[in-house]
Structure formats: structure tokens, C-alpha cells
View 1 (cartoon, rainbow, N blue to C red):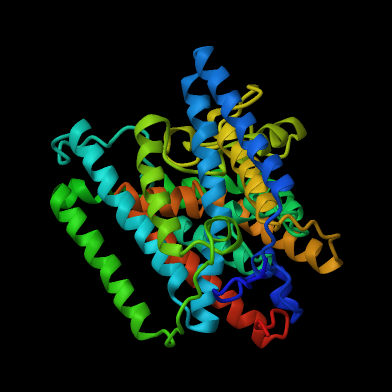
View 2 (view 1 turned 90 degrees about the horizontal axis):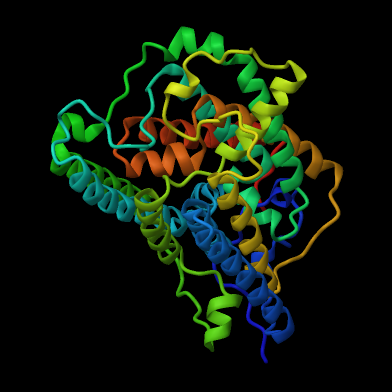
Length: 420
């Protein structure tokens, strides 16, 4: 059949920073191949069987985590839902479609979680917080964590969740970025006590419905999202017509899904995940393994002040083989591999020195920022804003500021070149 190039703007990848041609999976032509699609379906089927078996053995939460992680991985891979990519497309190319997808995800999730909160906690002003929601303290430490995380995204080319789905695509940078993230978490543990006592211990935990009521908080959040959408529309270049797929397989597998569809699915998924298991997040398991390693190596204090009393993607020391978040992350990577394989976008590449250096340095910043900020762009930002936490909005502002500063400074110094 005739090959069709994916129509949306090129995606950010580590290769962009070196002025190399765009060879990311999303830029490659689609070829319909039944054998690889059959393998992908078999992989997803195995995830389904594993979930069924776990549920039958009385492990409902890990079973659902596998399902939710698989859905999340497929949507991330097919819609290219990468927070850095979204921002860079607008920042460099004036293309706001990715950020519009993020706004759709937030709006959908805010409405969904508000309905759940209203059923569980009818009066938001009692002083209680909804169970397990990612509502964290607002402090200068949160701002520093967001700036560091944004810088790590700009240097490594992705956020943590995007590195996870790109690991399933064979990215040459993702393994080093994730290894750097582990190291960054360990550094975060080493600095935690001083930062906590200086900036976090007495910081306010602000839940907007507690101040404005459910209706007020919902209206303020949607109004702010609408204002951001208006600003994006006014600061973006005119976009040409988007090409459409000629058949269903190409639409599902060959073309990048429209960002607003990916955002809507993620918003709904975030609502169901909170209702049935836990808020969306991808760093709790990574942080837990890093905490275990840091403790074994004597790298971190034996006591981490106040950490286990806070909310977010908290890194809990555990000997369990696989936690709920671990099942979620495992399914995310596996399902994104299946989606990439079916689309012909599994393109493993031997890493260059640039991939290793950028991934490692950026990953360390990602890990330190995620540990200090109690989560990443999925946990603290996405799930936090959906829950009505002011900490989510503050982290978001710091993250995107960190990206812009790092891109601008890096390009001015000739270290990070704009895409060709």
C-alpha cells in the first residue's frame, strides 16, 4: 500500500539538539505488517491474562494497575503525550496542539475527580482532604524541584513517563535517562532532611476546594485552562490542514493520534485510576528502588524527616517484588513496546556519546526534581492539578519555566541547538 508520512510537527528528541535529521519513530512511514501486529496483540493478551490471574488470586489493585498501565502506555505512545514535546512544539514551532491535548486531559480529569470527591467528601471545607489525592505542600523547595525537573526534560529530551514509553520504542537515550533518574533520587534522599526542615516542614498544604468549595474551585480551574488555551491560540502560528488516514489500520497504528484524543483518554483514565487504585504516577516504584539502594549503600540518612507523612509519588522502602505502581510502570513499558511494534516504530538504536551524556545528566535532574517535588509531571502536575492541589499548578509553572530557561540558555551557549 502507499506509504504516508505522519502529518504533525516533528517531535522533540535528543537528536534535535544535535541538528541531526528527525529519525524519531513518529517521523517514519507506516507499513502495515500483520506478523508484527499479531505479536503485539499477543503481548497485550499476556498482560490481560496476567491481570486476570492476579484478580482471581485476590490481588485486585495490581491487576487493575496492569490494565491502567497498559492503556496509559498505548495512549502515550500513539498520541506522543510527552510534556517536553508538547511545550517544545509550541515554543519552537508555534504548534499548540500538544499543549491543547494536555489542557483537555486536565479539564477532563478535574471534572471527573471533582465528582468523585463530592461523593466521598460532600463538604470540602471540613478540614479533611480526599484520601490518597496528590495534594502536597507549597514551598520554595517545590519551585526548585520543578525548575530542576524542567531542566532535566530539556537536556534529556523527555519527561520520565516519555522516557518509559520511548524505552519501549528502543530509544538510545531512555535507558541512561532512567538510570540517571535513579541516581537523582538517591541525591534527593541525601539532601531531603535539610530541605525538608528548611522549606517544607512548615509549608502550607493548599487544596483549592477547601478554600473555594467544589463549584468555585472547578470554575477557577476551568477558567484558567481556558485562559491558557486563549493565550496559546494567540501566540501560535496558523496551522495547515491535517492529513487523514486512508484506512482504519493506518489511523490506529500509522498516524499520530490527535493530541486532544490522547488527552481526553488520559483524563478519563486518571479519574478511574484514582477511583479504583491510586492517582496516576510513574515515579513511586523508581523512587522506592532508589531508596532501597541508597539505604543499602549508606548513601541516604537512616531517617527521612516527614517524607512518609506527605502525599504524592512517595518513595516507600519495600521488599515487595512488585508494587501497584511497579505493575503500572511495567505494563506501561510493555504496552508501549507492543504499540510501537505494531506501528513499525520499534527502532532500537545504538547510543552515541551524546545520548549517554544528555540522558544521564538530564536524568539526574529529573530524579532529584521528582523526589524533592514528590512526583513528576504525571504525579505532581497532572494528578495534582486534577485533584485541585495548588502544588500541582506551582509545579507546572516551575517545570515549564525550567524548560524555557534551559533551552534558551543552552542554545545561547551553543550546547542545545534548535531543531533543523
